[in-house]
Amino acid sequence: MRHSIDPKIDCVFKALLGADSNRRLLIHFLNAVLGAALPGPIRQVSILNPYNEREFLDDKLSIVDVKARDDAGQIYQVEIQLLSYAQLPARILYAWADLYSAQLGSGQDYAALRPTYAIWLLAENLLHDDPAYAHSYRLRDENGRILLEHGGIWLLELNKFVAERVETEQQRWLKFFTEGQRLDQTQLPTWMQTDEMRQAMDTLNTFSEKERAYHAYQARQNYLREQRCIQRELEGRQMEAERLRAEAERLQMEAERLQTETERLQMETEQLQTESATLRTEKDALLTEKDVLRTQTETLRTEKGTLLTENEALQAEAETLRIESARERAAREAAVQEKEAALAELARLRALLRDS
Image (cartoon, rainbow, N blue to C red; front, side, top):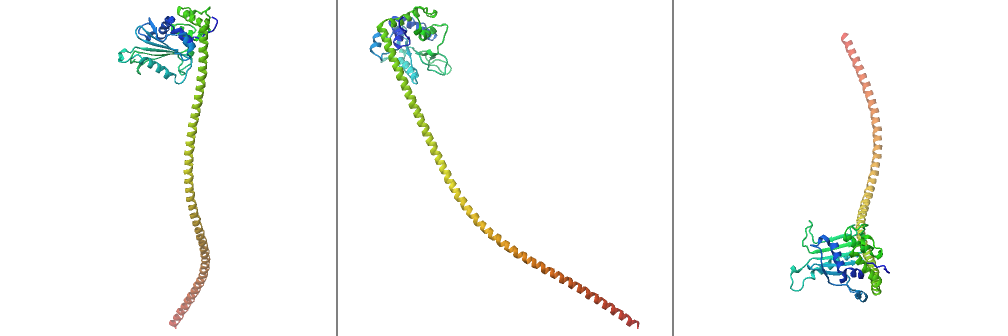
């Protein structure tokens, strides 16, 4: 093999599973991935949009998924997705619903619907909070009961797939898609030693050795590289726009918060001004009352001085009265003594008179 070929590039992927010459590979891949979900192994399929080498040279917008129908009428879609983005789950679901509903033509009823199976190989992680690489989505209720056995969606995240030993055919295919670009056609590892894997390597070898096919591969690779750059640039711009939108919302919320805070501070200021005016009025009233009390105190102090002076005068007068009273008492006592002496003398004289 002269050139290294990545089986995940869409034109190679479709040549692997969507070419009529590789129909056996598609049947093997579908059985490997869907396994027990099928009512029975797939024996035969018709590819609804077969691979055409020229479309990848002449039409960069060519349809690169693989659509097929088996002999029971069941429909299959297989697609490789190199980029993961926020709207990818909606796109996956829409593609399945569109394929499922497109079965009904004019005048057909729901009995004509057949199970539809969508398989997506994802080169980048989509479910970041789940370490498992394989996921299946079907119409079930909360108890796991299936509403209708009409297929579903299978997601295979290649970045999460790690297997040293191949134990199932599904793992064999996933290992091929993750490591196929590094394989040497002349020295294939043991896990590639099957008819299907050798046929897959022959397809990669065709892209490597045929000039036209390799140019188609390079053209698709360059186109997809440009699309990835554009996608990432758009995502970067979208993230920046979302960041700016979030920043604008944050600033708006901050402005509203500041407005609310300003209004609250204004109300508090008005309340404080009202309280200040009230306190000022109360202060003036208290100062007036203080002046009144000071005047009353001075009056009382003057009255007290007057009363003290009067009290001292009364005390002096009382002392004078006590002295005069003591003098009068002494004079009365002296008068009484004189009177008693006179009476005694009178009694003595009366006695003398009686005796003579």
